[in-house]
Image 1 (cartoon, rainbow, N blue to C red):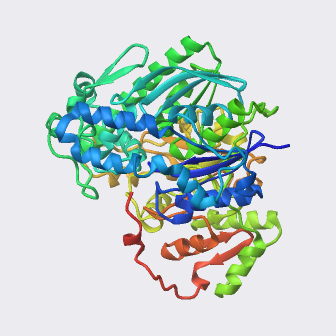
Image 2: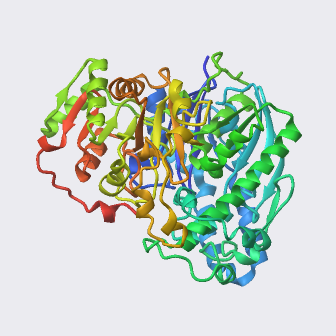
Image 3: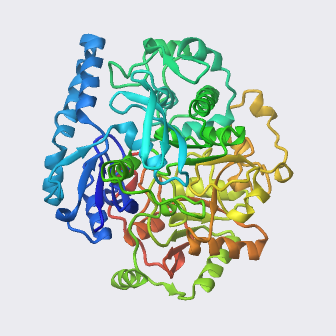
Length: 615
């Protein structure tokens, strides 16, 4: 008999659900994809129902239902934090009380109202937050034994943990607790630089190469004490998150010369240098911690999870340092992945189901293609019902060749095929594709497709066998979680004189061709790489292969299929709406091609700029 576990994460950010059967991930999805509210923290009704349908199971047939953290421990932290902070924390206490006492303590009732049952055990199981992260990193990894590092804002109390996974067993033996948090430190700078906390941290990372780390010494001398082993303490006098609703306070502001940047205002040299400074600090902590973890565990391999593990620049530095032989990061590293981790932990540790490790050395995350898919017949029915004109190409090779030719002609393609990705990265199932050889691709896609800040770089999808032709990188990076340098022989010199002299105008840098693949080369000659293997996603692999046949380049631009502030599209209807709101040229819905100029006039029933909260 099989054992099926439902894992749930909810009520902080990135709510999600996952189904695990006999230790295998059957389905996983974030609630935001269905609700169309980015980082939706609410109870994941839609995601749970999708997972149950994908597993062909009724809720009463579940062997267990598990929640990804422990609300009692969280409440303990809230109470003690507010007692320490005193009367000035009253507003924060009221907000936290509504979250923990008003929602999390009643998660059992939410589940019963949503799906009618707690399964065969008729009880809700709880894990601890960082154990969920650790399980999400170790169990799907290709390693029988691995060191574990988890890093985020805060779980119940823990913000950082170090441990070891062996076969079915996970042991976490060192931790750093709130209020000392590398994730909250980075989020404080995210807030100060005018980006949204728990959403804009990747923007701060992308902004860092434009600046110089001139504030690094001020950070080290005033904000964080970093030990040789990577452990750290924050000077909480500079932060507002202990007793208010904002991340920084007046003392922090005075240290860095003024108030935080207002969101959507002009980005100045100060923000660029702040980003460079905190990025350098974060990398230093993670590298020291990785060295210490290697010494403590003696493991050859490392796995990571938690929101900070999405910092692919730091990840690339760990890989390049060669501390471990191999390195695997959970693709849904933030709270969404906690649903997978919690269910896997119960599967392997509670029910003692043996781990299944791929004999080919690849992970068991299934490319993270774990969300809903739509049959070509369903797409055709949708298009016919709506009266949208389309061309259908049933032959997969001919379809791939047609799409590749369109990209090679400089057109922008919305690509919707197969099961939706789990995690924040589009990996060729819900992606927007372009030609990396064209300098204008970056600005066109940023300003006319994504409607976002022009400085933000795009990622390349590259054939796995060709990655070392373009980047100083030998390993695979299937989940776009590693940054690597572009090969030196492909790089072109840039004229940075005015910018280096203090001119804040980033456009003079952005518009320069930095390499022979300028659309995916950042200003520091780096790129956030996705390697594409034929066994992970054959249709996407063949598009890139056909592009190589046409151009000699086994690489294309890949960005998520959405506009700014919108979750990645989930359904054909979502994809069509996004396609018509932007200046994409072609929409691929499975084996159907839709050309923009052939579509009827699009009457948008909502102002999406008001519907979606800008990230």
